[in-house]
Length: 290
Length: 172
Ligand SMILES: Cc1cc2nc3c(=O)[nH]c(=O)nc-3n(C[C@H](O)[C@H](O)[C@H](O)COP(=O)(O)OP(=O)(O)OC[C@H]3O[C@@H](n4cnc5c(N)ncnc54)[C@H](O)[C@@H]3O)c2cc1C
Ligand code: FES
Ligand code: FES
Image (cartoon, each protein chain N blue to C red):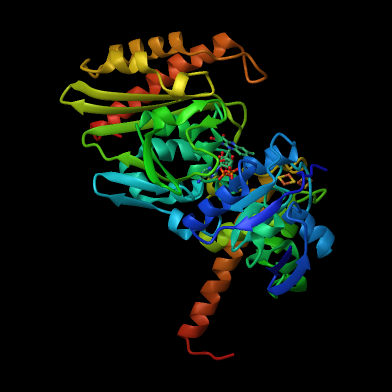
């Protein structure tokens, strides 16, 4: 039986209260959202927080809404709520594609947007998808809020820009016209973490690509993105040839490691195929064809 | 830490360690051993219960996180419908051989009930997706899908009968 080490438990009544609790209890206190990454780590004693501050009751942090030119995701929005959101379905098909293949419906009923980003697991699908979308993350501390681009948010595996006495409260995704997006993942079995996964966001200007975002999970891409491939697309014609070139560039620059999910060459090959495929699908969606 | 959890409609107050998992709270503190405990790693779904109506893996929820919440387990499922008061999903699993060893069954039943509460007429694909976080080593899943379809159809038939009885003005 896997049992976490002992800890004290506090339930936060507001964001302010959560921040106070985290500050008061010091660096060994941790917020807990869905607990679907933290509790497994605590059972394995890979994490031994002395105090857990439960964000579960903070309704103010849940929900997806359009706010001005952004779509706002509260940190406590569950995976299942992202998948069920009409706003997401209309504007961000990349997140629908991604959420369908994140874990399983039961895990998606608990796991949250904020927890996914803060876990900073190199295989986290939402990190790749939000990076492709060039989202920003709102971080709250007792001294106020700051906004960090998601591409500056992840500092390395399991490391983020969030200090021990801060919280992620929101993720903001800009709404862009003439834009399509898609996500695809190869997994060994239903509900597993990715062998490799890619997400693409394309903004078109007639037949040309005005802007591109490419996110990658599980393949050692710095900040979860393929910048060289993105660069090759900017201003290029939105054609299969451009997408194939971008796929090859992305594959060249990733640094996957061999593990039980597959060897390096295989993962590189997947990056090439998945980037090309998601770009093609994103372009079709930008044109309103799919 | 003292917590109160409403399990199958009845409040239970216990003093528990914060590290106690909901599965063990149900099994060891309340002796509700219908909720099974399998992998301990959020993989098998044998421990699935409904938390405020939503099916979750109870081996990855702290009992203290359920303080003040409603938890429904397989023990509360039979509420006066079919043979021996079984719920239609239980009756379906019995009729269509949705179980063999029965280890995965409590979790499968809770997920199936939650699905039918949301979607009274799910396609086989929808059922497969709904139970995709749960492992059955025996049935090969086919009969589980059939069992849930059986329950959906039985409930629809019951509703149609109730509606026509009402329409014809017959009182019972
Ligand atoms: C069986 C299984 C399969 C999975 N498969 C996948 C998969 O295929 N793809 C995938 O992407 N993910 C997968 N996951 C992970 C899942 O998406 C997790 O739910 C998610 O990573 C973490 O969300 P959470 O809310 O549970 O976070 P928690 O476990 O509660 O927290 C994770 C970390 O983030 C911190 N934290 C949480 N919220 C905040 C906040 N608002 N501010 C600051 N810090 C915060 C916590 O302190 C902790 O360090 C899987 C999980 C399981 C159990
Ligand atoms: S015991 Fe909870 S998922 Fe296996
Ligand atoms: S009936 Fe044996 S595991 Fe499902």
